[in-house]
Every structure is written in structure tokens, then in C-alpha cells.
Length: 200
Image (cartoon, rainbow, N blue to C red; front, side):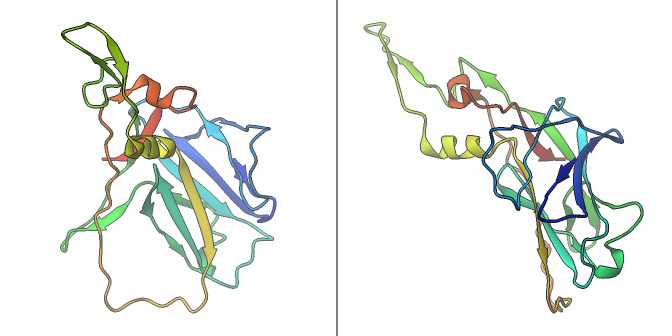
């Protein structure tokens, strides 16, 4: 359970099949006092939910906005009104909500396997000269490195809102997570990543 010392009363956990996932804390991670960071072990293709709750002494004088970011993309932005903050059941983000102009729908979050292959055609790092048989190393593209740094990271940010009002013109955007193709093993060497999130 993620607990931030600077924000007493706020708790967050990832659930699969109605059970909270075990969390592991890196004692050597350098994070600010306003941040809590932990690692979870997941299984490919399992649906998950983000459970969060507010309890005293968390202030209830303003609405709270949460932004859920997965693999570097903002996916869900629930707003919790002051009268809803201390709900006994807590709150759940189970997937992005979208509207196609007629219907509302929720696409559940799901852990997707990160396909790692030494013989990746898309991100091939080695090139074999067909005439000489010599191998040469090509650098991994910067855009791939950038994407890989964000894979497997779920972030929940919370903000107090002042003067929150409903907009007369609301645009609903269908939010999708990018599905990565086969990734060369060397692109993530030394990284503690194995899964990316997706909504289906």
C-alpha cells in the first residue's frame, strides 16, 4: 500500500482479482517526501484496478483530482468531490472512461507482456553483412529508449482543486495505450521492467 508521509490519510494499492498485489520498496530509491514509490509483481494478461482511499486527517474542504499515468500517458482523470472523499468503500480506477458520442464505456486496465527477442526485426540491433559475415552494432533509436524508460510505470498524482466547475462544452477523448512491438533484449538490459499496461 502506497502511503505518502506528507499526505496522511491517502492510501493507494493495485488490485488483481479482488486482492491487493504485494509491494516491494527499494530502500535506495531517491524520491521526494511528497512521493511514494514501490514495485509490484504482476502476471501477463491479468486485469487490474487502482484502489485509493482518503481517511482523516486528509482535508475535505476541496475536491481532489487524480491523474493516472501509465507508460508515460495520462489515462484516467477522476474527480472526487469533498462529500465523496471519505466513502467507506474507497474509490477505484478500473480503466479509462470514454464516450463515442452515444455511449459511455470503460476499458479495463490489463498487464500486457513485453515481448523480448534477440532476433527482433523491428528493433534489430545487429546487422550482419551478407558479403563478409561480420556483425556490427547499430545504436538503439532514441525514441525507443524514451518509450522503454516509461514502460511498466504507473503513476497516480493528486491535486486539490479550487473553484471547480462543470464545463458546458466537454470533449470526450478515447484514450488508448500504445502497444509496443517486439523489443530487442538489449534495449532494456538492466531494467526491472517486464510488463506494460494496456486497456482493452
